[in-house]
Amino acid sequence: MKTGSKGKSARPTMAQQADRHELYEKSVQDTAGEYAFVSETFQQLHGRPATHIREDFCGTANMCCEWVRRGDDNTAIGVDIDPEVLSWGREHNISKLRPEAQMRLTLIQEDVCKVQTPPVDAVLAMNFSYQLFKTRKTLGGYFSRVRDVLLDDGILFLDLFGGYEAFQEIREKRKCKGFKYVWEQASYNPVNGDMLCHIHFEFRDGSKIKKAFTYDWRLWTLPEIRELLYEAGYRKVTVYWEGIDEETGEGNGEYKPVTVGEADAGWICFIVAEK
Image (cartoon, rainbow, N blue to C red):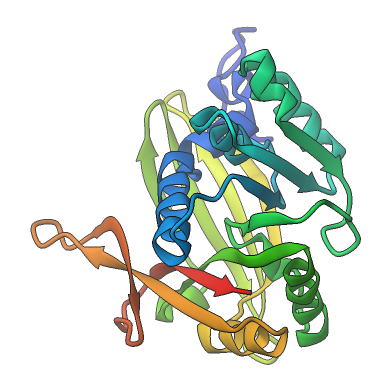
């Protein structure tokens, strides 16, 4: 961690006082939006509500908490291999739920390719984390295992980013309340698709948290993901593309099914894979 502090003052910098998980939730996650998309899409496709979900690569279990808060019948299983992030989630997120809601949420420290859980309506693998699987065999195997845990009308929900800037080595900054979020695509190998990305945070006092999070991924393309899902046995794979706000030219947060997308510099979409 680079603090960027000056002088002899012993006062801790803003970076030293900050919590990287809290910053991540504030700058990256949109649990309310994801909940709305998952619940509304499932209802539209199957005419019934989704109540039981599993969140893979759940991290701080922020989405799991959102899910059980939203409905008294909702249950959530969060799976992550990292004990530190699960512990943080228990202390800072799950502890804030009502006791009965806590009873409807289960956290499991396990590899998502090995974990065994009861059948669920939907599995969520958001924030691109499944891209840590770098071969067709490993990613396709993960998709197959998820399909096995879904109920007969279950759905796997994914998100994906792309566009021609996704293949570039760039840094992008975005202002958040009290800090700046910095996304760095540090390296990309066009031979095998490997990419290394970092998230940094910067503060008003000049201090920084460098490499708060690091991601060693393969940059999968949308056609590859769709092909792997069909090969894993999903009967229908639909891409939901974000609409554009005519005034700002930016995304409007509304996603609709498409067969043709825009060749933008950068885009994020949802992928809905029906069992």
